[in-house]
Length: 100
Figure 1 (cartoon, rainbow, N blue to C red):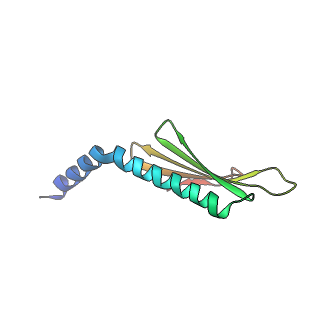
Figure 2 (cartoon, rainbow, N blue to C red):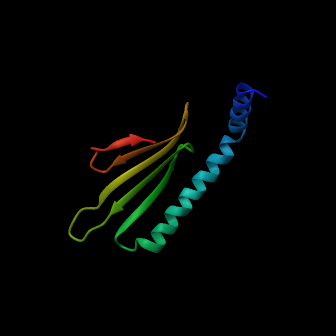
Figure 3 (cartoon, helix red, strand yellow):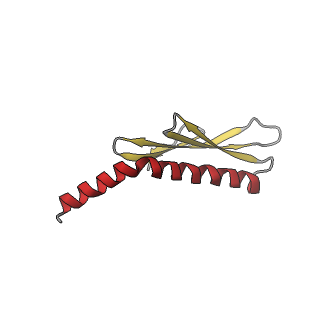
């Protein structure tokens, strides 16, 4: 089998199982956020993991300091695109962003 056939087979397998893989990734990330909150965040900061439209997962870290407004420091935006899944990372100050 040549490389073109191998690539076509790989793409077909990914297309056929994409929804299953996405559900597994989503559940793992949501569970990790819940575990992090329960073990490391009592009253100091909180990680929120929100599913939007079934295809987009937003993860934010909000820090709570006494005497200050809550500060959202980072947003991780995981969503499928036409070129595969993309992770968009933005800082709370809006000055840093990028994709992975």
